[in-house]
Length: 456
Image 1: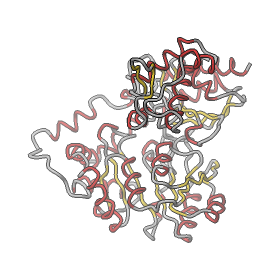
Image 2 (image 1 turned 180 degrees about the horizontal axis):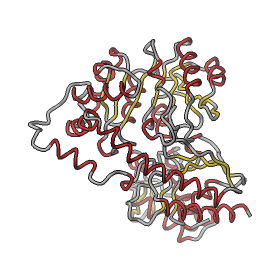
Image 3 (image 1 turned 90 degrees about the vertical axis):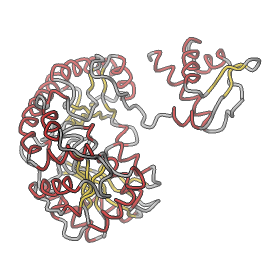
Image 4 (image 1 turned 90 degrees about the horizontal axis):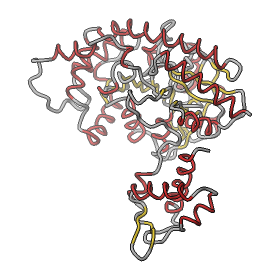
């Protein structure tokens, strides 16, 4: 075990004692020698851990008392990890091979693609005041036109502009879903959506998947034993598995949910990232009862920094969600909404994707070749038809936590499967959308060595 890992273990244990109330503010903590003996580590490791805790404001040295607990409220809460084992955000030139990031690299996009659109707006903006509660009207009209062209007819009045898909989920969870209800979702599922629902006091019921998406039979079984709240699904190029739900399965899911009055949240932010052929029609497009709330976003396909997403649903629901959003932030950025309207309203978005898909396809194919070359005897995986995630399952029964730590020390980042399942997993999520082909290949080569070493 690396020194850094040992230090983190000591840090986390001390935080846990304070969190549980075993050590209270003003209480002296055990000496460096005692801690070193308890953890069977060098005193230098303990000193490094204590220095980190002092920097976080959790402990402090006090004359005549030694090292004491300084705070057990905001400083402790701010320092606690929200998602275990999630890689840190690092600058692009850090030398890290990032196979974890769920976004497209800048060099996937055409040169100057964003400046051209922003340039069109120059001189045409007279003010940037608050927009309507549901969002900038030309943008809602553009989104409605775009969705209609994609086969999901909606009206502008049925759309709420939000600051990214995550805000959409948060609004739905806080404004529409009942505390203590069950959220049915694919297992594994997107880690941030898991946290959103759990933070609202909802329980999660994982639904098994196959190559066509979530299994309706398992949904029916779980539905009978839970207090239903809603079904949350990512049918297009699912995160983290990359699975594309078939049209037949979409119809099955919609039929079951309509019959049992189970609302559906369709997270469709990866739809435009298809590489081999367009995906099936959205679940929303088949919904005649207003049972589906649809979430779309430009964050994965155009620019995360724009923070533009939308919810499409029945008008009374959109009105309710817009009231909650106004209480939260008083509206999404006016400038971002205008940029997005320019993209979607002129059909530039669809044109833009002809280039992006071509570049992303090269990365997907290169990733497939790299995995086959280096890991064919060590893991199993499925190459997706779109998106940028590959869900890889190791054949060896090794600790993914140790592999993660060793890989991070080697400058390679990936997502352990456990953060998507909430428990032990022999799977990892790799992204080919951010790291370049040469970087991806180098990262997989190094990971192969680590897997072999941990298998011995």
